[in-house]
Each structure stands twice: as structure tokens, then as C-alpha cells.
Length: 276
DNA sequence: ATCCAGGCGTTTA
DNA sequence: TAAACGCATGGA
Image (cartoon, rainbow, N blue to C red; front, top):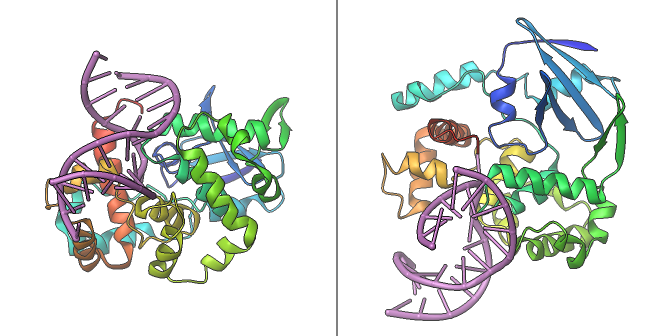
């Protein structure tokens, strides 16, 4: 068991819709970092964390939850540029640094979909094709390995019941099959170039590409504008020309435009909160 | 029953 | 070239 300081909003960040394999059970939060199952207990001043592999766990957890970044400072900067953000920013929200392959696949599934069903589908993918792990007498399934993923065909993916998205995944996996280092190489590009490359893949549009970069590559200058963020933005801007709006947002918020948009998303989605 | 969900690709006017 | 439309599925 390790202890980390409770100075961020684990629950809110976990269930904000950025990750899909989290759950809460019997007073504990669970999430999975690659091959490690995390079981987390929230206490007043600390989070207590157990895992099937606790080697170097503290560092891995700090990295995953992005605890080394000074969000308070960034937020102060954002508010100084746009006082409207004051009522919607959250100094305790964190953008997790998740697995690139997992984000690549998960956010293709996310399109025209809701968080609950995305979660069900991603978990199903893991149960069908991922490695089983036993932790504290309970079974968990890891996200499938790259080898396993690129071996999957359309019939395999049909089992997920994700409709038209299955063929997009097969197509995207073709890219990884041709170049297993595609995502690592993508990390060498700037966000604009990475967007261009990702959206050149059939089935990956600007929204999905932004989320992959934001949550898999920690690019806070991406533009994850979904239906919720649009609802917020439509109150202040004419969103009929999305590219023009993105330019204005970047001018306003700079390299943290994605984080600013994330606050809008959280605010709008939580306001309507129907546990979706 | 109709609408919508962390949209995208294709067709149409 | 922008707007409209179809797409699979399931929950509200």
C-alpha cells in the first residue's frame, strides 16, 4: 500500500468521461494503469492505494494522475485571460496521462456515443481479448496487447456490438499493423501535425483525434469539442464555423485551450447530471 | 415513441 | 463548400 496526498479530485476526474475502465465498489475506487489494477481508498488527507504490482507505484501514480503539473498556476493564467472561466474552472481536476493505444481505440468507440456505453464496450473488448489478472481474489482484464489487437478481424469486433464503429477500428488497427511505432512516432510531432496525421485515418475526425492527443499524449492544446462543450460554447459564440472558433479559442487561451474546453465540458455535463 | 450520446463520412443543394 | 443525412446501439 502506498499513500499519496489528497490534494486533487480523484472521483470527479475519474468519472469525468476521460477514462472508461474506472468503477467504484464498496467504498473503493478502481482504475487500471497498463498491467496494474489500482484500488484506491479516499481519506481526508491521503489516498491509500493498493495494486497487484506496487513496484515503483508512487511514481507511476503521480505520472498517471498528472500530479506534478501545477494546475492552480495554469488556471490562474486562464482566468486572467478570460474571467468567464472563473465559475467553471476546477483547481482539483486532473487530465490523466493514459495509454496511447487504449485512447486510440477507446475514442473511436466514443463517437456519437455516451460514456456509460463506451465504458461497457471498452470493458467488453478487454474481457474478450485482454489478459486476465487476479488481484485480491477478483478477476480483472487488461486492455488487449498491440499484438492481440492487430490480429483482430471484423468478426471479432462485431462481438462488441458497437455498430458502425467496428470497421473504423479495423481500419485504424491496419495503421498500427503497418507501423507498430505509429503512436510513438506521433508523439514526436507537434499537436497540429499530429492532428493532421490522425484525422487522415478514416473513422478518426477532429473530435476523436483531439481526445486521443489530450488524454493519450497529454496535449492540453488540443480541441476536444464535443456536444457538451458545444452547448457551453454556443452561449458565447457562433459555433457554425468550428475552425474559426478554434482559432479564437486558441488566441484566447493559448497552449492550454484544451484544458479550458475540458472545464466547459465538465461544467455543462455536470449541470445536466443524469449519471450518464 | 422520439431523441440523444465526448462524430464521422458521404451525399446533396 | 456548407448543410443535410445515414449510421448501430441502448438508455432516458
